[in-house]
Amino acid sequence: MPDKKTKVLIVEDEEILLTALSEELKQEGFDVAGAKDGVEGVEKAASEKPDLILLDLVMPRLDGIGALRQMKANPETKDIPVVILTNLSDYDKVSDALSLGAMDYLVKANYRLEELVTKIKTVLERKHTGMPKLG
Image (cartoon, rainbow, N blue to C red; front, side, top):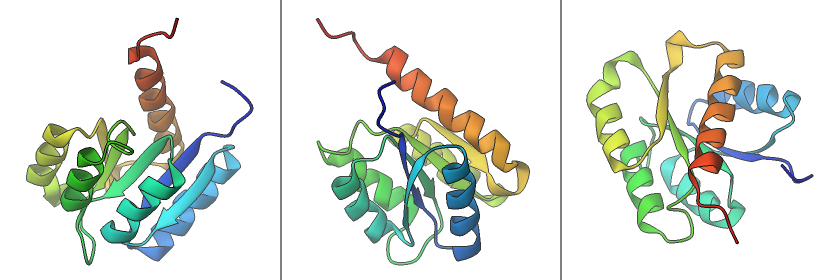
């Protein structure tokens, strides 16, 4: 990859989790942007053009499904890979999110931060290898 840092947008309404995720990803060398709800997440996805979005499903103003729908409808953000952050009780919403184009998901209670970093790298690699080569 070029010198440009990989940018991750974290859309998460729980401030403690948003901060913890941001700090961990920054330590791993990622450029991180944060949003506290779906409306802000959709706006930042368009303005920041992240390489990957971590998207909570249950949020105020606009939930993750609504935000994902808007991101996938926008030509500027539709190809950004999205990984859903969810709680155990949200499996119906997870399947909705995957059918809308999310690439993967993590259950909040079941992962460690190191696993999140591995998942991000895997999703980014899948995106890069799945894209047609230029020239």
